[in-house]
Structure formats: structure tokens, C-alpha cells
Image (cartoon, rainbow, N blue to C red; front, side):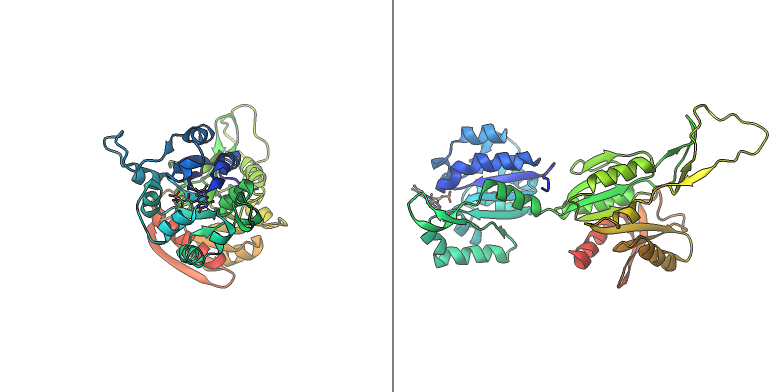
Length: 390
Ligand SMILES: Cc1cc2nc3c(=O)[nH]c(=O)nc-3n(C[C@H](O)[C@H](O)[C@H](O)COP(=O)(O)O)c2cc1C
């Protein structure tokens, strides 16, 4: 199952009898790594206590738009900014109406209006209410606005009716939330290959380009795992960050984490060669030339692309000559979905620099992206990946 590690979920609990299932939803979300904060409507509070939700969520439960406790913080804006996802489960007919009509009459509806987080509703109500044309239209209005719907199930209802309107199973709700995030694995930075206890072979990669992509993926709502080598940049703590120093460690870490990934972006500058033997003691200087025997490291991108269930896989090519030709050869050789070409021949671009100029090459097209900061290029790259592959 996909995970929700580091993802922040606001659970809106509104006035349905199914609100008693909210602690179960919270637990299932937490089981797969989510942090949960609950907003309880007045209707919801008729069916479940604040205390149960507070204890299961391990967070304060929010139920008051007119919070007078904090002098300078506006609660609904703070919550709106905190959330990666706003899940309303159960969503009552009344709350669905409020959302469809952009009402801002309680804390939950205000948070929804003030947030750009993904929105998911899991309606729960009497089967006849769920069939009601106005309720259906309100739900359709929300779907048109990109709100995701978790269909209620058919079954025996609390009122004795049989039909569709029962809240979906909490485990399915948690899985649905996890599925809305694209799992993305990104490698970045330089690997470091030891020669002796004090010396190593590495390269100039700073990790900035990979971080630009990781940040853009987080902004786009992905669940991001970063495997990083030597870097000179600060990582994003919304990603799952895993250190891997050598090419061998990075290979192992990628293979351990590749399952369930939707997208793999190999941005790290992995050394192509490593010392055949790492000498135990420092190599002494002599008058003779020193010959170091190097052997190739494993090809991470190529091996990911050989997997039965391979994610959309994108590599980088840092070239100094025959740019497009070399990048196209790499695309074919690795059997990946795209290559992002870096011209590292220009000293003010690429490695170590804050700016870059790239070409996105897939099997059908070549897209040039003009010089920009690596932060902005990250956004452009994610936009292209979305357009071409998702
Ligand atoms: C016993 C009882 C059970 C209810 N169950 C539901 C329900 O399952 N779904 C629903 O949409 N409304 C249900 N309602 C009506 C809502 O609680 C009511 O519309 C309320 O205003 C919703 O407020 P809220 O959307 O702000 O939480 C029920 C009302 C009562 C008295």
C-alpha cells in the first residue's frame, strides 16, 4: 500500500451519524504515516466527542472559527496553509451544499475556501438523501472543481433503509487519500567513492537541480522520497530524505525504495567508476607515477528501467559536446522515458551553479527550456512530466 509519510491531513468531520467512524479513519491514515488534525462542525459534534478525536489524532481538535486564544494567528488561515489534503469524512448533505456554494459559515468551510490543498469528500447520509437531485448536483459541482469523491457504499443504514449512502470503509478512505499522491523517488547530489582513508573520487554536483525538482513535486502534491549523496544545499523536510554516500549505497537504497513509486527521477551525479581496491592505509607519495585501477559502478537508471513494474523513469545527461545526440543515445541505451540534458560545458551553468539551461528529451519530442534558476526549472520540469506522462 502507498504511504502518507510526512503528509498533513485535515479531517473535516460533519454532522452525519457516521461521524462515530472518524477515529477509525484517523487511525487508518496514521497507520500509513499521516499527521492528522481534525475540524469538527457543530453537526459533527452531535455524533462524536472532541475528546475521542483529540486522543486519536493526538492533536487539538478545532471547532471554533472565532478563536480568541491566539493573539496574532488566524486559525483558519493557519490550518488552510498547513494541510496537504482536506478530507471531509463523513461529509453531510449540508456541508456539501455549503462547499458547492462557497459558503464560509464555520471553521471548516472557511479553511476549505482559504486552502489550495487537495480536497476529498466522503459523503454519508440516508440513501434517499443521497439520491436527492440537489445533493447530486452539489456533488457534481464539487467534482467539476476538482474535488475528489469517495463514493458511499450500498448497505443497511442506521435508519433501517437499504441503499447507497453508507460511509466508505475507513481503510478504503485512507488508501484513496494515499492514492491521490504520486509517489516520486528522486536521487540528487554527488556520490563519493573512497580511494584510501582520506581521499576520494567525486564530482561537482551540488544537489540544487534535484532539490528544485523535489520542491516542485511537493508543491504539485506528490509524496517525495529523496536519496541524496554529497550536497551543498538544504533538503526539504516535507520529503523522506535518505542519505547514500557511494554509488553502491545509492543503488541499494534506490532498489529498496523503488517499489510503489510512480515516478523515478535520477538527478544524482553518480560516479561511473570507483576504485577497485580501497587501500586500508593512506597511500604514500613516491617519485613514481601512481596508477589507480577503477572499475565501473552499477547503472541505477538502467536497472530501474529493467524492472517488471518500472515507474516513469527520467534521467539526466551532463554533456560537454554532441549534446542532443549524446542525450538521445542515453535515452535509448537506458530505455528510460526521458532524458534531461544539461550543458555543463558553460562554466556559469549546471554543476554548482544556481542557474541552468536544459533540454527535455523524450521518445517523441525535444523541448528546450531557457536559462533560469534551478527552482523555476524544477517547476517547469514537473509541468512537462505532468503533461507528457500523467
Ligand atoms: C439523528 C440524525 C442523524 C443525521 N444523519 C445525517 C447523515 O448521516 N448525513 C447527513 O448528511 N445529515 C445527517 N443529519 C442532518 C445533519 O446533521 C444536519 O443537516 C446538520 O445541520 C449538519 O451540519 P454540518 O453539515 O454543519 O455538520 C442527521 C441529523 C440527525 C438529527
